[in-house]
Length: 257
Image (cartoon, rainbow, N blue to C red; front, side, top):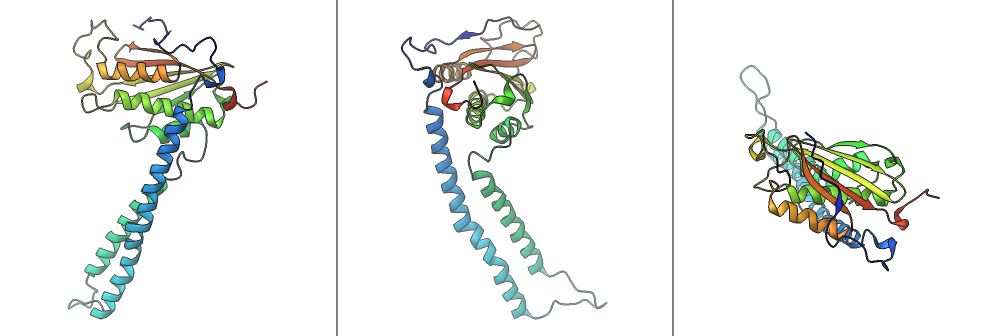
C-alpha cells in the first residue's frame, strides 16, 4: 500500500518573503562541487606523476633485465618455457591500466555532460552495488547542465545519508525526475538490502517514517533545509521513497521564456 503522506516543506526550508528567488538553491552546492573537483584533480595528479609514471618505467627495466639474462630458456622438446619476467610485465601493465582508469574516473569532475541519465549513474556508482535506474519524464529533457549537476548532487547526498555501515547499499534504486517552470520534482525509490529492512519480517509494519534511521532522517531534513526544498521520506511497500521539490534558479535555466 502506498504511503499517503503529504509532501511538505521541511522546517526552516521556506525562504523569507524578501529572499531573492534566484538563491532558492544556494551556492553551497556549487562550492562543495568546486572543492571536490579540486580534491579529485589533486588526487588524479598524484596518481599521474607518481605510481602511473613509475609503472610506465617498469617494463623498460624488465626488458633490460631480460636482455641481461639472455634468451628464454627452453625445455628438452625445444618449447619456450614461460618467462617469469613476462608474467611480471603483464601484472605491471594490468596495474597501470587500473590506475589510469581510476585517474580518468577522478578527473575531470564533474565529468563532461552526456545527459541526466549518465550524470546520475556516474555520480552514484560508488554508493550503489547495482547501477541507478533513471526515469526522466515530463520537463526533464529541458534541464540545463547546471540543473543536471544540482540533481546529481542531491541524489548523491541523499544516498550518502541513507547508506552507512548500519544501513548497507540498497539492493536497487530508481530516480524519477520531472520538472515544470518553477520546480524540479525528484522521487528516489530504494529497495533495501534484506538484512537492513526492518519491515521484512513484519508485513503489518505501518510506521514508514519512524523506521528510518534517525541519522538518515536528520540528514534529509538538513539537506532539504539548505536547498530550501520540500521533502518527504516514507515507504512504498518494502521500498524507501524520498520525494523532493527543488526550486529552479533562473541563472541555471536555459531555453525558458
